[in-house]
Image 1: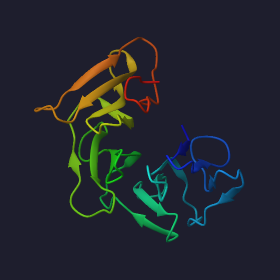
Image 2 (image 1 turned 135 degrees about the vertical axis):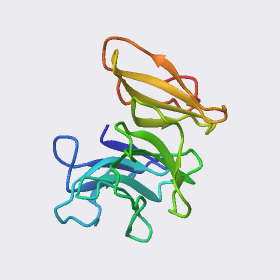
Image 3 (image 1 turned 180 degrees about the vertical axis):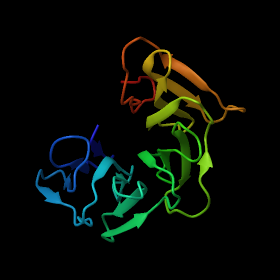
Image 4 (image 1 turned 90 degrees about the horizontal axis):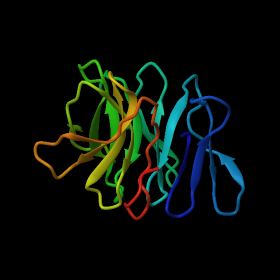
Length: 194
């Protein structure tokens, strides 16, 4: 879960053990690793996701603000995407790279999915309001279906889908078992979920 790849072959991962790290490493097709010159300080990074074009990296910050930030590989700059006081985690890019989806605890007990433009302009939009926790997002290549992990009070971690064109939007359960299903990923042809 702590590794991400772009269509151009760029790979980024968290160095070290566990689910957070103070160092993010990238690989190009040549195979040589390089630590990204992201601010080390006392913050920890989680959930790295490379943009579809390979030019940016979205990460969850595990610091006092718990926001989503975007690293530009080209400009070597770090920009905070979310600026509210809520805990924001689990970033994911839309297939066209124009938006970032993330889980946010804005006033509710459970994180709900939001999205906003990747450049941070405009206000975030809540995609659905649910009493169940929604995280670990993967969008189908058509940009119309969002698959996620949903923590159900009845069965633990399940997999659900949100049809973004449906009004009103509602979660459609895909996998609902007594076991934990985590980190769903939609295949590049949009036919499968791993």
